[in-house]
Structure formats: structure tokens, C-alpha cells
Length: 371
Image 1 (cartoon, one colour):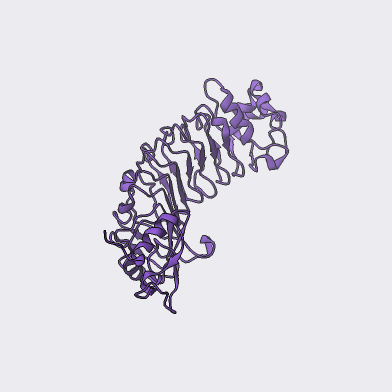
Image 2 (tube, one colour):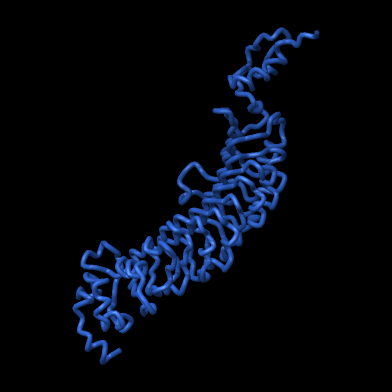
């Protein structure tokens, strides 16, 4: 029976016990440590092979940080160097130093989570990344769970490949350039975020292929078109955010219809001027938030009032306590139907016009004459 020298057993022991050991290349012929040796956390690669990236090993997973790379060419060299075990938990990249992540940049490496960010807050970082290739992360199709791209100018991304990522449950883009919301299919995706990404239209069927989505966020996008029933195919949706700066002025039939039994719809600070009575339909449409819009009014009532719609009216119209909604009500002919029907007044006992008058105290004869 042949006995293996100790030097050959060291990597095996390191993988079994997770200890930091000396780099094998620094050991002499008799296993002695050279005076120029350094510590290495196996299974990470040698530090000089992957510089300026750095690798750390903790709790059974390797993390690779490449925040100091200069460009994509340097990144390519790192991942095509000697990497004995190219299976990483986390990868961190600087979105301000890369313009393109092509199909081969990561070689055989796989990842569970990818973060494209900067050292400061994303609002104050310069972004350069515009393009991600169709197969850039495809080696991670069976491992990738979390893809967070916070510092980008992304305009090219292979959305049609997301269905191939078996475990991906979190997808986020900041500062992208996608005027039309992409059609996305994924059985695993639960969180979908597009912030400050120039979205103007959420097209019909864009979300049909996301049966397990629970959180949708399109913060600070100039959206002016939301297709009818676009959110209805999401049976597990819990939170829907279209906040801060959309160009939606008049909400129409079924634009925010939902089928989930427990969903919160956030539409505050959007300069919304009018809301149709069946804009929010679903079992829990009363979870909607329309605070801090312009001069919101509820357009003429449906054939019969349901409890959800009554709650929307109450939460939308301003009261004496302006902080309740932050909205203004001009009390023009648009609310004549509400003023002229006393049976609706209990829904809005403290609703207040911009002038300070209570809506229920307005003279109906004015509306009969002028409207």
C-alpha cells in the first residue's frame, strides 16, 4: 500500500473541516513553511491568480468580490485564471467600471447570488453597464437565486432566458432603460423590481408567466400605460408598488385588478387625478393606497356599490385631516353624482374640498343647475 505524502492530503483535510491552511505552493519538499508563505482559505483560488478580485470562504460557501477591477477585460482574465473549484456563493461587481458582461466572461464559474453595485449609495454612483449577454449567467441556471443589479445603465438583458433559471426568486434592476416592460416567464421568481428604469408601459400579458410572484415594484418610472388586467394572473401577489412619479393621471377599468386574496396596492405620489370605480377589483382591493396625488376624484359609481369600492372612496377623498391622504378635491361637476345622491354621503362624512368645505355640506342645487 502506497502512503501519500502529507502535502497531498492538506487540500482534502481543508475541504472536510473548513479550516484555513497554508498555500501548498509555499511548502517546501519536506512540508516546511517557506518564510514568504501566506494564508489561503481553501477552496478559494490563490490570491495572486485572481487579483484584483478577492475570495473568502465562510459557512460552506465561497464569495468573490471584484469591486477593484478596472474593466471587463480584467474581469475576464480573473475568471479564466486557475480556479480549482469555480463554484461560488456570491459575486460582487462594480457597475461603474464595466460596460458589457459577455457570454464567456465568467468561464466555468457558477454563482448563487450576483450583486452589481458600488461602494456608495446607488443614487450617487456613476453607472456604465449597458449590456448582459444571453448566456452570461447560463452556467448558473441551476444555482442562481438572487440577481441584484443596482448600478447600471442596462438596456440589453436576456429576459427571455429567465425561465431557464430553476431557483431564481429575486430579480432587481435600478437605472435601466426599458421603455416597455419586458415579458418575463419564471416559475420560481417571487420578487421583481424595476426602479428608475424608464418604464413607460406595462404591456398586456407581461406578467402572465409569473405564477409565484409575491412582490412587484416599479418605483419612480414614468409609466403612463398599464394594460387592463395585467396584474390579474398573479394569484400569490402580496404587494404591488407603482409609486413616486408615474404619469398615470386617470385610472381606468381593471388597471389594477387583482386575484390574490391578500394584496397591498401602493400608488402614492403619482399625481393621479381620477379613479374609476372598478379600477381596483378583487377580493382585497381595499388594501390600495392613493395618498399624495393631485386632485383625486372617484368617477361615477358602478351599478351597485361593494365594500371594497366604498373603502377606496373613503381612503382617496381628502378629509379635514389633510395628512390622511394628501390629495386635493376641486368639487367640480366630476363629483355631482356623489353630491346629488344622499345615500352615498355616509361613505364620505368628512371628505373636504380644496376650499375647506365639507363635501356633504355642498348645496345640491348648484350641481343641478350647472352640471
